[in-house]
Image (cartoon, rainbow, N blue to C red; front, side, top):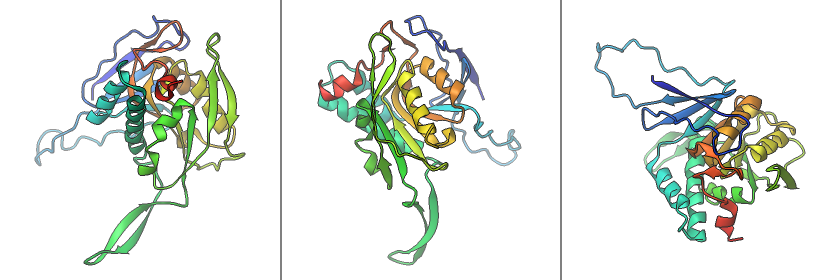
Length: 280
């Protein structure tokens, strides 16, 4: 398995931060971030081997370390398509918003793998009784959009998640300090320890907003290992800070862009996702 490493600046927000290119050896990319270093693991599809061929006795791939943050960029052509639509400055606001909704749908689907609680049952089919598996409706996913742009990624969530409950968090960024200010908090007083929490925010730039949101959620009882974050574009600066503070998190992104400009915007990024989506 080929592994490429790229250093990540953890504090700089200038355009010089993290210019080192990321080497990708296959269509699938998974980033393991720890401290100031991210690992890119190539997970190439393997063709079935005939019995007796070299490699038959190779051990199965190691499972992800639960104490290490995992960032996943799904290699889906539709994800790339809708990201291209969203990147285009000529894309009208309604189409931009629809593109983010489609990206959100794909990322929610990916985040649900081996995460959503299920139970086995039997149903009467047209011809016979069938053994089936359902997502457990008694354990709805706690969906937390970070307002206002985070709402766009969840517009199609009901078509993916059979059971969910939504709690809103509102932050506005101070354009001088680049620090987030909380203006709306609709989180429950207490999360169950095993509560599954899905946070949506299109842009993980300096990391200030997502760090504040995760801290607020964990302070109410949620565990980092049960939290999933979906975003359109992430920057190594924010991913490094998340990995330092909250090992066990999983982040699902359409793309990782390499640096921030002097105003704290991801380059090339999407611009201001909230303004583009809502026209204000």
